[in-house]
Image (cartoon, rainbow, N blue to C red; front, top):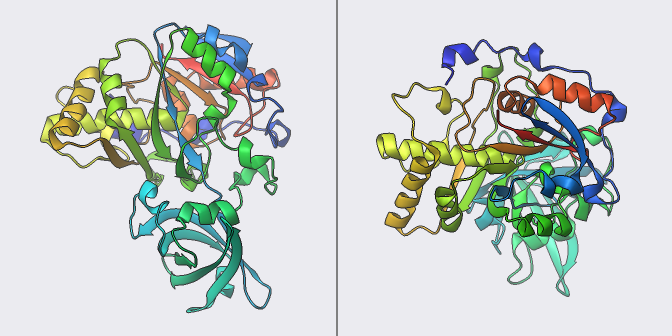
Length: 407
């Protein structure tokens, strides 16, 4: 494990590369699993199609998926003057900060938001819109209740209508800014994994976009186990690093939910664990560090700070021992699922305690995700990305895929 002093010497300029605009996939392929797939294993690179994935994952392995579901988080309201105000939902504040809870609220909710045209939205001004849900018309109202912190309160008419139905009926798909285009009707199903379930993400866990029911079926028939957890991907995932000393970057916090059956199965599993996406990897590694906290200090708040893994520890537990500690805590407290937050910043020097493999897309230059890939590939990311560029791979959210193995 690298010390804080060592990782503070990591420089952003070492993780830049040139990504031509025409290599950014602006639209999805017609068929999800037709995408290209590069494999990095034992220091060697090979090229495949994603529908060949079942032949690359050893029998007995476990794939861990993030089942978060993207909500249409971009809400557009119109002032009486005609000016449009955009409310981009970031994270819930009231009556709960837990995303899974606030999505089922049938009363007023408050969200921290990014607001387009903020200067034109006057204090105490209520913006309204109308939508038809389940055969009844609903009037949706939005009020800016805290300008400095960009807190927006939303309420609506109609009985027993949960907030998730409001955003589904009124919101637009929050496509990544680098696509440089507006969402189309096709994006609603395609910027979503086929196994998405838990509403609350404002960005898709894009590694999962390649999976089809056919690929999942072949993996199962090959005795590859699957587990699901939830990390609600936040807008911070697109925030570029601007500090040359990367540890100065304000790492975004994201909410995780893991149920006891998943923790139990992870604890018992002795073969390879493969994270489907960087979000699944960050959640799994965060779960490990929660076990460390329980073992070291009986701390039971599931919150992993940005640089916690780089502190000095006398001895660290094995994967199973750490997960056993989490499982024991959940059993003792009678808890069926745990909700936590993570700011974990995985960068070169990080020791991976859970994941043996990673399925992931190709990421932006100078991003936290490039640093994660660099850490997992022991610095070989540049060789992999150069090869992908040379072979006309498509990059970013709607782009092609990779499966990377721990050396």
